[in-house]
Image (tube, rainbow, N blue to C red; front, top):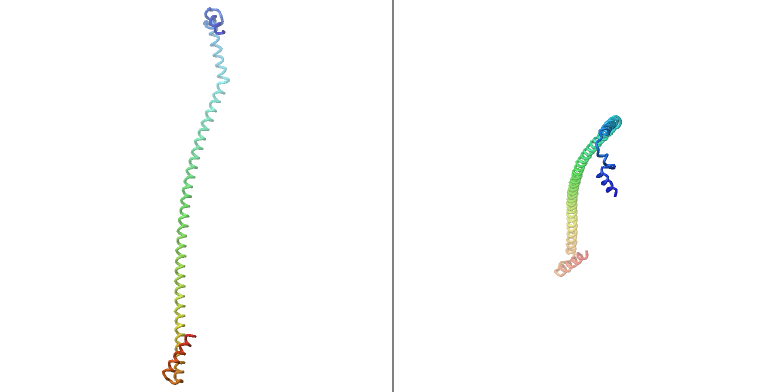
Length: 180
């Protein structure tokens, strides 16, 4: 409804819009003078603080961007350094593992060598002991056979040597040998 009323007033030439559309040189002159005066006041009072605030804001933004770029570069450098240290640590770990393997292999070979040497030594000592025991047994056996032969010869000489007596004598010595 308000719009209809304004439209009717503007068409009739009487009303609030008709004087707004009229060009009045006095009003125009005062409007230009007031506008210029306001611009000068704003230039003196508000323009410098606004420009300085904008300059400070721009400077702050530039510094913030520079700090962010510096921080990003520093972070990239730290990441690169950490990756290099990690690669170096992995390499050192591989070296330590390889050294451990080599050491374990050497210890294994040394233990095997010592075990083989010890086994050879024990076998050699056992063979020497066996040979000595064999020689002792052979010497004992020789002595016993000699004693038996001497004893048999003694008995044969004392007894009459008939064939039947000799056979009985030999049989009795064999039984004594079996019992011993």
